[in-house]
Length: 200
Image (cartoon, rainbow, N blue to C red; front, side):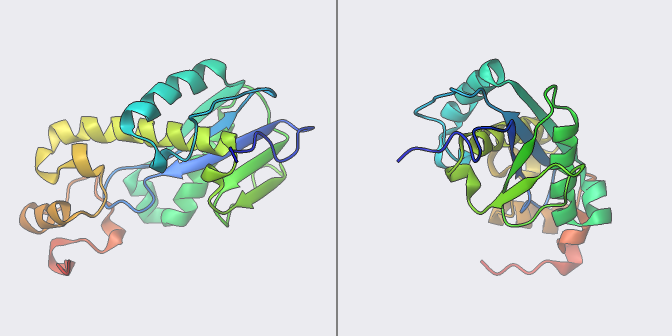
């Protein structure tokens, strides 16, 4: 069975998801997407299940066909100040802020969310594999964040961000131990050089 188009077909719904929550470096990026009432796409799915090529191809389709879409970004400095959970919510809020169509309901990937301007919301565990709008948001969040990490990789190639996108791979951890953190590392994630535990 394919992904569902809507939770409530009588309301304008925005699907929301984030990318980069478990990373050691880079921002957390969220997206909000409102799809048209009769939107169909047989390939659209949770971004983690798709190849990079399919994600970028779908991004073009989503941006062209969505009634509204937007991306919100929260920097590593902000993450360190408010913690990653609140940063994820803030990134979603920033994405919703920019929507050119006002949603009447929000579909949130995950089990927690901070209410946004009293708009009703539903938290859906693994929602990016259940609802098309959340899947679309997952693809935008993932691809826009990947673009940012590709650019940062050009400045800091030793951390392998073009490959790991800031996630805690062995090579990334070893590079932190040898070269230290960058301004793009999250300082509160316990990855200072003297705090590293290399247990793989």
